[in-house]
Length: 398
Image (spheres, rainbow, N blue to C red):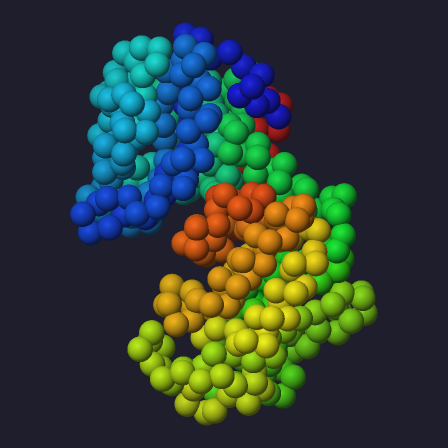
């Protein structure tokens, strides 16, 4: 795969697929610009070379064509400040006006296209739509790792129209390099921390990691299915009843492969799914009938932190509890602090996008770990050994 470092963009219009799917508040203001900041070095490299930049992205999941809530127009003020220039906006991502704006771009200028997903053809991977997009630029750069696992028009199909002029941006390059680092030639002990709601979302990654890691820590909502599988009483805690056999299977596989599997001993429980609910601490196998576990407890926090602090390679995907509520955030924060401490002592730590990235950033530790991935689903699929269409398209020779 070519990278932007191998290309001189002087006099070229670079069509960049970025992942600007950022959260907006009710006033359409960006509440977390992590993904935008991640793309800045790629964009800046092209501008510094004397190229012009055309940015294309999706935002949200619009169902019926153009929707004000999902218009990328809302990002223009933020982008203009970030690049200290007036970022131009095309009210459509294809069509006469978009082509005219793209054609008239001068070196150093930036054009943002309207939301790709206002066209159903984007998610369908429509070739004709991809070809229309391709006419906007001279060279194609994919810097949207977060959508690399989708076979969409702008990520997997468009590359064929740039047989010699397609490449990765810095985000995509760094994501792949860091993912490879926790897959191959790792320094041991290697600890994977898996959290989140469902085992079903993480089966493949857990099974693959059992061949690679020394320690596997499981927390979050999915841990209660393991507790139930072991015969515990979990009250109203999250449960995938049809996955208890699978949970036992994973416990046995870990034992067979010599992997230390750590499940939470105890939980912070609540009598309602609310930050204002009554709380208590109970062993994970003895949660009262009307109560639910919403965070790992003090024993689990201490045990998990000890394992993490003594690790040399760490992969973390998924929170330990409902960290968005302050009364149930301590488990996730404790894990984050242990990962930071291990990193300061020389460990390599990869935070696997999604809620884990949000949590690390919420606690202010984004710069204290080795790498925070911008793509939750894409990273998981890559680590499961799946081919990512957006990456494969850059590797294919036409």
